[in-house]
Length: 343
Ligand code: UD1
Image (cartoon, rainbow, N blue to C red; front, top):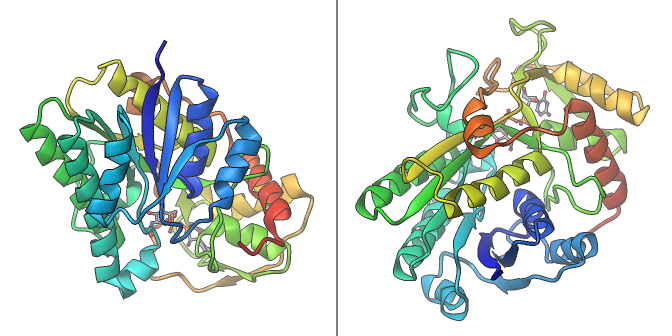
């Protein structure tokens, strides 16, 4: 049987690299990656090869340059595209909105138009729970209204989804799925691949593991919220579970199981975990006591958010294999493996 070809943009990044591993593990797909290494390293490809025993074809291309990106479509027959390549730091997007709108929108527009030009019928878009903003009703399902965006980053995800909906309406043969991630954390169980950031992270889990090795000092942002222990609640989800959902979304579109040609799906475990519970899980699996302090609330933080992901469970046949302990254990193993790395 001929293998189908999947183009993964941002394939050297955190979720992209884990998704490539899961795609290769099915033995059903040829995978091509396109990445400009703005916030990632080609080392990811070596690690993918070590883990899977497979070498993938890769292009170092800034997808905002349509002429250069077109080369990938000219040289390969692509069946499906998973679009991860984007900037994703919420705070930075507030400080440098144009950087985010330029990069995230231009690369997306180029990918969609090249798909249309070259007859690529299946498109998976990396979206985010941040499209929902500050929600009142929990858990959040896909029918939750989309309010005005809280940040330029979230806005690029909202616009991206709307753009895809319009293109899908206009091109009935073009099919798109938007996967709205809650809080992706953890690393591949081999510990050879994980979240690689060139700069200090802002997210909780890499700050916990980085604090445990003495690289950072964790401050818990507020313990006076109206929650069970006073700290904020989030829906942390293991990156390999998210990666698996992308593989299922590719199957779903290739098997023509979608009922509409644009469909959004939430990806979360459905279990809300507080900041102190996340720290306790880390201490349990690592056997290390974490030194942290309690500080002021972080402006813009929502009190609690977690997902209703039954649509992905029912339609994609997805399930989560990892709980918070496994998320923390793999994040910790990855920290220990990568702590001396400089590229
Ligand atoms: C943010 C983004 C979300 C993105 C996610 C992962 C928003 C609205 N959402 O989520 O789109 O998918 O990052 O990249 O910005 N915390 C501390 N101390 C710290 C850091 C975090 O106590 O030093 C707490 C926060 O207050 C929060 C929780 O840990 O309660 C998680 O924070 P974080 O990892 O930054 O993710 P979110 O802000 O939930």
